[in-house]
Length: 75
Image 1 (tube, helix red, strand yellow):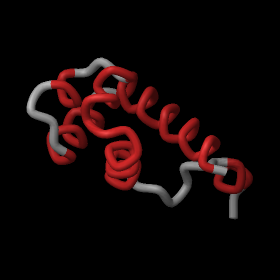
Image 2: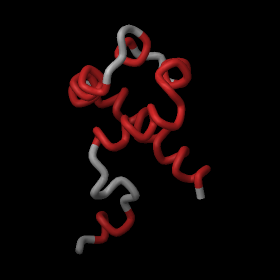
Image 3: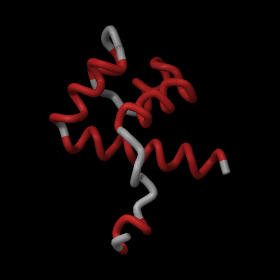
């Protein structure tokens, strides 16, 4: 196993799992307030969010950061 995989807390976690977890934890309204992107605020769905996040690196980075912060709080 490479050193990067050992230190990467997102290793093995899909983007769909991340979005689904955030929606379950925060709900669409709060998630849209925390990360102000259209796919979270206007007719939100996991499918539309995944499509946008896969094409938009800056938004994906924000979502991943929020997910890691959420996981840290859960511990």
